[in-house]
Length: 245
Image 1 (spheres, helix red, strand yellow):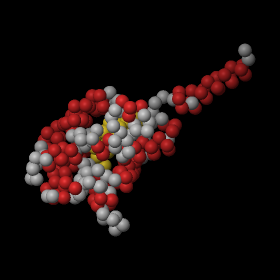
Image 2 (image 1 turned 120 degrees about the horizontal axis):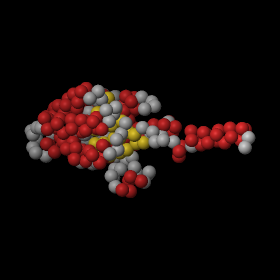
Image 3 (image 1 turned 135 degrees about the vertical axis):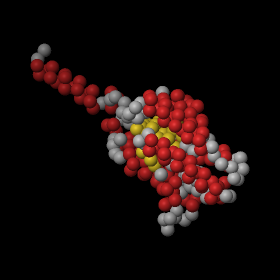
Image 4 (image 1 turned 90 degrees about the vertical axis):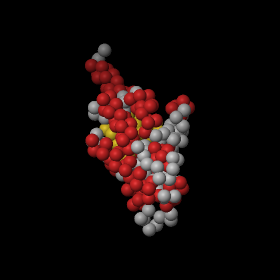
């Protein structure tokens, strides 16, 4: 066995280990969780966990995952969508072990709150949220995740509404409630050194664009962004996180 043959064999083995994607270690895990705005109809079914046509849904989370995976294949990023339509913060709390702790992400993005507000809306036009309970439940998510991973990078998103659909009636009251809820989340973002994404501010600014034909161009029902709205949300997430992750 010659030294030349040994060197070539070692070189081939090194190339396989370093350059073959299938043998690369998994890269950073990036988890998005919350309600239908993140869900994007990914479904949360066993089929959706394995079917790459559906695994990321069709919201801003999908756009973020697509951009990073396309631009940085060598990073082998692992994206997870665990948004579920209709969820409130207490629903996240009840499924946190399975849908967050067990995944053990390196980056955690949370967008939650509009269903908490919608639940209060159904109690009467002047009903008010229990902000103390909302904060306690939200803080529980962050505490459990930080205990699991002290180095976890957290991204907290501002909940938002538009004066469209159900919010048209008595919008000033519901916007004030939404803003107070956002203040709670912003305070938590500061406490946990999280990245803060001001989505309500984003949509407010978008409506000032003279080319915008109507409010529904960005958010079709006062809760769910359109494709254009999701693109703008993805731009904000990407700009805040930088490239690569």
